[in-house]
Length: 359
Image 1 (tube, rainbow, N blue to C red):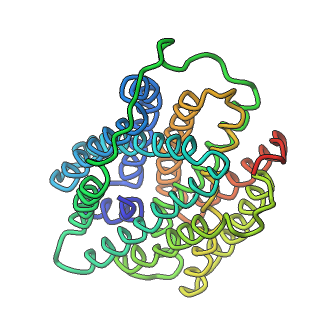
Image 2 (image 1 turned 45 degrees about the horizontal axis):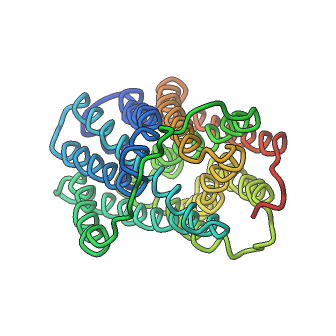
């Protein structure tokens, strides 16, 4: 589904809607993430992290099928809500499962897991961009998730079934520290900047460089390409750096590269700058999530539920606000929201540091 965000301008053109209506698909994803965040701890208590991840994948596939087959905005928005619930549950339980399994190597494992995700996002973006320039419906590119899900199940899903015994004390609950909640706000702003770029970078690229919708959608592959390389190889660069130091470095890179992308009117420069934005964005979710887990007093599943809530608020608000603002002032001016998000996230990392012993 990685190609869905860059395809929002294509969907808007297909349905003949405003930027605000098109942005409601992002809002649906966000509301789905909020709903899944409240649901996740209950699912994990009953089924365990591994089985909950597969429940998420099943919901995701169900929603993806109906998104491809339904033409009207209210239908596609509803389908994307189902997709969002499934994706959020799958991601939350993959991260916590890997974190528990790899222990001190969790930062590298989670980052490289997200790198694989970015690689397939890249495939989705290219597929949809290429289909958009043909007579074939670009939405059919989203069906590629089905054979990949089948492949995962056939090669691993049937053979791996860890035992889960529900905790007799019930699902995780209770209060979390003030540092957690301040950092939680920072996560909202990092995800807001990421999804504003995912959903509307193709529109800004088209506005600045006068490329066609299909070409601009395809060239946005620079962003997931940067995300993939940063997530896969980033943990090998300066491994002695603490989580906060890494996060501040990539936020600074993201901001600098984005400003170049925002002002550029040269296609090659925009492509390179967007690639660097992807590099800067690559490890934000991983590092910010690890910060939150470190502040979570051992309540990992509860903390991940709140991570999903933060994701939902950001995904629901950021693309919609930017799309609605673009209807009034244009996409170029509206995109000034993004560097503001980055600056606030950076300030929160400075304000609430974690122990540098964490890696």
